[in-house]
Image 1 (cartoon, rainbow, N blue to C red):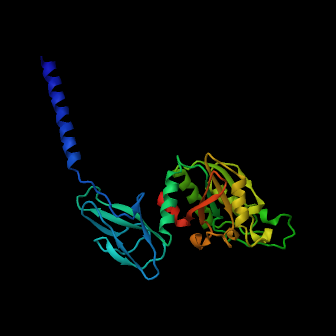
Image 2: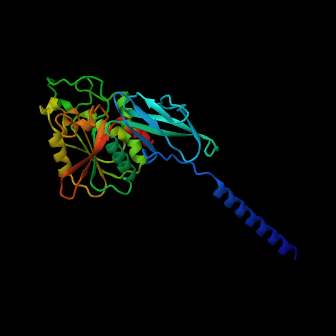
Image 3: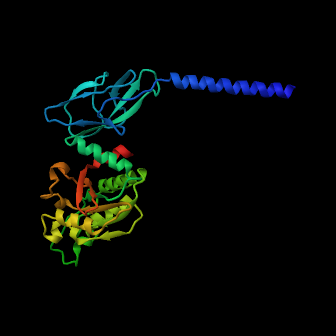
Length: 302
């Protein structure tokens, strides 16, 4: 009898806890950012040289503040303001009035190509499972150590990793390459092929990304100091077409001359070292441009 009563009491206690939890869950407010520009956890804003408005709508009352620890900007607590900022990635804090959560930080991506930025971020976030035909094209990471000695008597001097012969990655470049590699790993992007120019700084970009793959080298991706081709985007696109991969992502690392006269240069400008762009190979073999991947975009995923 005592056993039966003890079991009954335990059962009643469990039922009460379930009911209590259910009531709390039902009554718990649903904190959401409702702005149509808030997509995939990022607030996208179109940049204008003369300034632009921000207006953040929420499902429950909230206040907005500059981020306490990341690249940020001043914003009115209401979430409505007029901004004069350069394109880039910023962060702001959201403090929910109900304290659930107490405070969270959201990325604000300011860009001159809002639709392309949205589709690029979306594609990168989905690449774990939706990756067929995608190709990430990168300019090598920051390389300010040494200079290219085009008159060097050393055969194939451009392959040298000696800063007295050819420019090499700086510490910033190494760190940026590691950041790109870490972002790809965090996103579980299935990289299936890595193709580099023959220049040491391009190969080193892949080495610091640490993707664990053999690095193929293709001279069609070389810098103009070796190839004497000021315009080579067509060669870069041909490298993509010559390396079809239907299962996994192909990553290319080349140089600035992939930018010259590139039909998508307006979108990928200014194409600094460590910047890139995303392409997709169609079943026909033709390539579609998805959008640019400036270095700061990778911070969204880390």
